Image: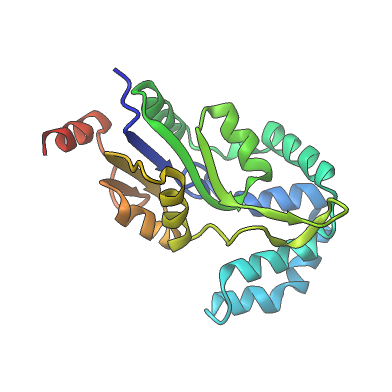
Length: 216
């Protein structure tokens, strides 16, 4: 029987994908010259984040302002659809897609929790069967152009755990699986009953892990 009291939360970049999908998206959208120029213009913010002088979200927003500019929402949506169709499939890890399918086959609720933007994560996640996407959201101005800032805090580290808890509200899961690859997934992994971080061992046997939780 499907068990919707079990939730599987997946990070995207480095976990399901092989690389930072945001960089690939921006470069494929604006071209290499604009990408390089934008990185140079945003270098003070990027360096500040690298040395922990400013937060990652501020640096990421500065990079996107310098590269995407005041791009209209409709154009960004079209860019995202092309990216999902043409570029993103080559970046995906087959074993992680198989794990997503395995959770779905068992009737678990699956949610994507990522610091990358929803403009391309949402259409991709819908095609794979994710129930929800908790991610960084771009803000748009009155003319429906990218405002150069985020509508919500950058979905990284503690923010991932906060988003998950807000998503399930008063009905937390009986069992939470979490999949990640970096420091940005630490709090989500600590909140989980079963956590896997890339580079720290093999994927847990899914049915065995569930059985151990049921028996406890």
